[in-house]
Length: 475
Image (cartoon, rainbow, N blue to C red; front, side, top):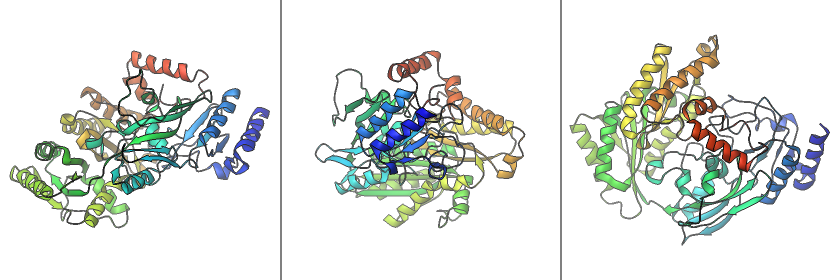
């Protein structure tokens, strides 16, 4: 206890009294995730304003072997940024004060930002340069760049631009001993050994704290064509996707799928959201094309592809956005799913990826597997069909969940049933959400001993005292 008190005093002396929070009321928003699924304990929360202050915090914690938990916007869906209920209480390092945009290089199409920058802020700054930072997700107004990199966030633009990993050129990282690695290079090509930044991308803060990043920018699309349509079924949606690929090439930038139940929840629970189509349908797809030059003909290609699909009896209804406002409204429906699901009940969110060709088989197989366990269970489906990532969500009403004798075992059984289907199809149980606390058992089950041993060896080499976000990512 004396050591902890002394540490807090040191941190206040270095960072300032207002940058070190210890009161229970002040800690509340940092020790629980936004869905209320996880809640733990923290020794304190610190708000460093510079990389050097982050390094000081880590050095002092390392000296006393006190765990360090880096936290961004705390929007994780798998509990990776929330402290545990067991073990020593960590120091939570919030990067929220580190929001500077350090360097903008328009000619190099790169931007260097601190880890606490909000994703939307980076997108807006890029747009001023007529550039695009393409990582886009529902929480972009609150999630931070450091968090998106630490979890290798996906989102709705992976089809065209790739995951976060594909859009990071360089990193600055505070290591577990408090040393600082400056790898903020704006290079597309650097063939000088192991690409160290890749070690920290997706590592969920278990190897070090990302404090800044050099991000890759792309030409800003100036023309868009978007449609919302109802495919006959997932197999039809796959066939229409192939038609869009053939007709549109690189202009195809988004292909999002949801079932009717997901759309119903959005309409019921999020104000000002409406069914884009006149009638209910079992399945829905949002498809978007974009171009950075002449958009002429894009709407024609979109409409012609939809007409071909309709003639082949693959789609039942469709609308095309006729203005930027209509386009934004349709995207708002897609981006409202997390808000809608949060209040609808207890959704056991899964994050599977399979080969795109296997998406229909995955949906059929997972539906059968879940309903073998709980007949008639509500199932919500939403996902990025264009990259094979489907969020298959067995959904309990709150009363039904509370009535379960062993809710934890039920959740584990249902998630395992869904993940087994993905595994049999050559897929993964985590496409974009990461591992955090939720996925530890699945890591132990699906990862090979060689993979786990390699991960543990890297962890041991970089964090031998196991102070960096312990108990996450690696079983």
